[in-house]
Image 1 (cartoon, helix red, strand yellow):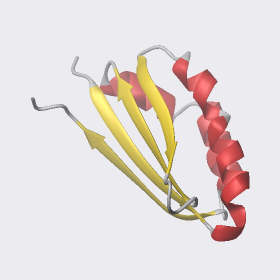
Image 2 (image 1 turned 90 degrees about the vertical axis):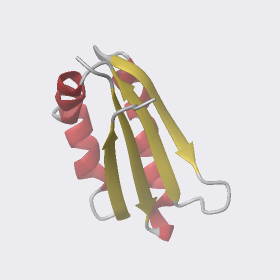
Image 3 (image 1 turned 30 degrees about the vertical axis):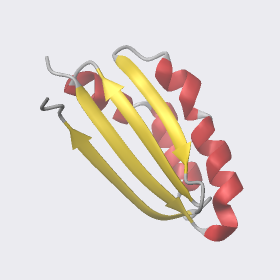
Image 4 (image 1 turned 180 degrees about the vertical axis):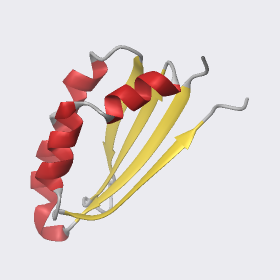
Length: 96
């Protein structure tokens, strides 16, 4: 099993920044407690408060996929639907 790094960039609609931040923060503790979660950090851009980034490290692709299929993550995605301007998820493997 090889580790997997996820970089997720989320941009909130200007009128929904605080709502989205609150919803994203709800993911932290429950995700960090999941099997295989090595790192799960949420960042907010210093200049553009609507821009958020998750930096995640997982013990394996399979355990990351289990996270992506979790009820609490799906519930969050439903909650923020309509509040998000853009979302991109990059799945990466460390090569050095």
